[in-house]
Amino acid sequence: MKKKPWRMDTLLPPGFVFLISILLFLNPSNASQIINKCSNATSEPFIQCLLANSIPHSLLYTQGTTSYSTLLEFSIRNQRFNTTNTPKPLAIITPTIESHVSAIIGCCKMNNIESRVLSGGHDYEGLSYVALGTPFVIINMQNMSSIDVNTNDNTAWVQAGATVGELYYHIAEKSKTLGFPAGLCPTVGVGGHLSGGGIGTMMRKYGLASDNIIDARLVNAEGKILDRESMGEDLFWAIRGGGGASFGIILAYKIELVQVPSKLTIFAKSFNFSQHSSLVKIVSQWQDVSYRLDIRLFIRQFIQVSSDSKGNRILQVKFESLFLGETEELLSIMHKKFPLLDLQVQDCQEMSWIETVQYFAGYTNGEPLSALLERKSQFGYSFKAKSDYLTSLIPEFGWKRIWDDLLRSNATVLMIIDPLGGKMDEISESETPFPYRNGSLYNIQYLVAWVDGDQSVVNRYLDWIRGFYEFMKPYVSKNPRAAYLNYRDLDLGTSLNGDLSYFERTQWGKRYFKDNFRKLALVKLEVDPKNFFRSEQSVPPLNLY
Ligand SMILES: Cc1cc2nc3c(=O)[nH]c(=O)nc-3n(C[C@H](O)[C@H](O)[C@H](O)COP(=O)(O)OP(=O)(O)OC[C@H]3O[C@@H](n4cnc5c(N)ncnc54)[C@H](O)[C@@H]3O)c2cc1C
Ligand SMILES: *[C@@H]1O[C@H](CO)[C@@H](O)[C@H](O)[C@H]1NC(C)=O
Ligand SMILES: *[C@@H]1O[C@H](CO)[C@@H](O)[C@H](O)[C@H]1NC(C)=O
Ligand SMILES: *[C@@H]1O[C@H](CO)[C@@H](O)[C@H](O)[C@H]1NC(C)=O
Ligand SMILES: *[C@@H]1O[C@H](CO)[C@@H](O)[C@H](O)[C@H]1NC(C)=O
Ligand SMILES: *[C@@H]1O[C@H](CO)[C@@H](O)[C@H](O)[C@H]1NC(C)=O
Ligand SMILES: *[C@@H]1O[C@H](CO)[C@@H](O)[C@H](O)[C@H]1NC(C)=O
Image (cartoon, rainbow, N blue to C red; front, top):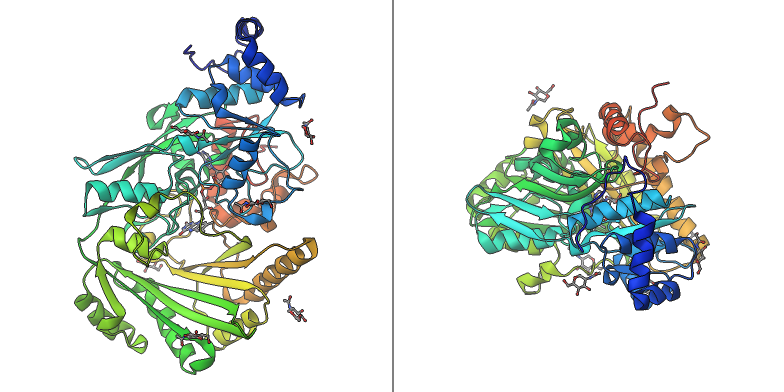
């Protein structure tokens, strides 16, 4: 039974109720299953609606079944939201074709149920699988993950439920000299990552993942399936950095692949803080040059603080680098621009692009290429993260204070500082929703991670990272203090606080998007005026009054 997605402007499709009765009547075994599985009164009409609209029963996971818990827990990437107190969806649906997604949106609207869409499940605040105070379902896109690489015109169509690891794998399968500039962690999903930006090791030459999108397919709030042409340039603009979840369900993106050399070079050099009195000089030189080096060269600083086996706190500074070229040229650039690092030929390794992907994914022990297809995250902790941008350089005394403050933490703490510049500077602030272009030198991510603990333990870590964020204030961007959408942070505010004015409850929007927030809110007003696609940090339709 194939049924076209109905149009949402006709509220109840004609004969709808009739259709359900027929379906239940003709298929009693199915009916009893529904009733057994859904003792939960609220989800029953919703489930019936799905079944009546050609969603196979096998794609529905309802509360109380083992497969529901397994699928839900598998999707949760931040163990902070893997607790019994975390609100759970009424159901999880795993659509396999585009029309399923339209049907799910229709049934959600009809039953007044919110939907959350999950592609890779890496949302830092769990917004793809948790909704507070409202019945909701999860649309899990993992089974819409096909990837079609075209080496004639160097493009690919990739469905939203694919991971970037799968994408990289399939590009490399077709060509040794094509790549795609997106994030480092292979289990990150295309739906969230590309719609929210996507920073990675090649951004200084090729920009963000979202800068390389050339077409898209999406289901809008009316359940219609649109592509770039039918959605129009404003909506297409919004879903390239503004976050997909405010505007619809992204089904797929068409992306432009980029040229990579057949041989690239990577290096990593680490320093223990306590053993290196000249570290502050090295860090300062790195900071002074990295955002304006040759655009083929990416050197990030990775600070990790943890305890050794004797309980001593260890702060390690690591410089990790990708160069789109060979060792000899890299060494000559480094000796000229960043001599204090004292890079030697034995610190460098030449490899293919896909091997650099494996390297940055942490697969350095001879794992097969197919490890990039593994969907289970390697990162099984509870965590909280925050972000900043640097628009000026941190002075030497600043770095020393930062290290001292980091060492006062009690948990595993990361601070990752990625250089921008290059191609990032050439794109205007309003070309896409991501505004941190020329003038932004570095992106910073702070992350505190821990293994289980009760609420008081959790609160201690949350307090720590919030305090550290306050501490960093003098060194980072101001007016607004910028943040990166893909490192989502609900401390910046939530649009669902109905007691606040539109202006007050959208302050977080300025932090992610600067002046582009207004255009996002206007697009939202046009495409989803009733705010069907909403979450704690979705863009509300612009309130004109
Ligand atoms: C270990 C780790 C490493 C990371 N590394 C990087 C990195 O190198 N660079 C970087 O830029 N970011 C990185 N991130 C952040 C990552 O880009 C974001 O968390 C991103 O939003 C994840 O996308 P997802 O599909 O996996 O997540 P999800 O949790 O599935 O989705 C994130 C958000 O997007 C929405 N969404 C998901 N799918 C769709 C869809 N099909 N249509 C509309 N909306 C959708 C969700 O509802 C949610 O609001 C990393 C995150 C983790 C946990
Ligand atoms: C559904 O059932 C669960 C327990 O079976 C209950 O906790 C939840 O509140 C119910 N949901 C609604 C919306 O009634
Ligand atoms: C989530 O918690 C459950 C129960 O505590 C646990 O069994 C499961 O492994 C956790 N999920 C993940 C992905 O770690
Ligand atoms: C995804 O599809 C595969 C077969 O294509 C199926 O075996 C699997 O159960 C599906 N997964 C989910 C979560 O629906
Ligand atoms: C840093 O210290 C740790 C723990 O003492 C040690 O294992 C590691 O080898 C040191 N690293 C460097 C680069 O000196
Ligand atoms: C770290 O632990 C010490 C001793 O247990 C405690 O005094 C201190 O407050 C803790 N610091 C933080 C940031 O939690
Ligand atoms: C970036 O801004 C600086 C200072 O305003 C300017 O000199 C430079 O040309 C700009 N770079 C690009 C690529 O536009």
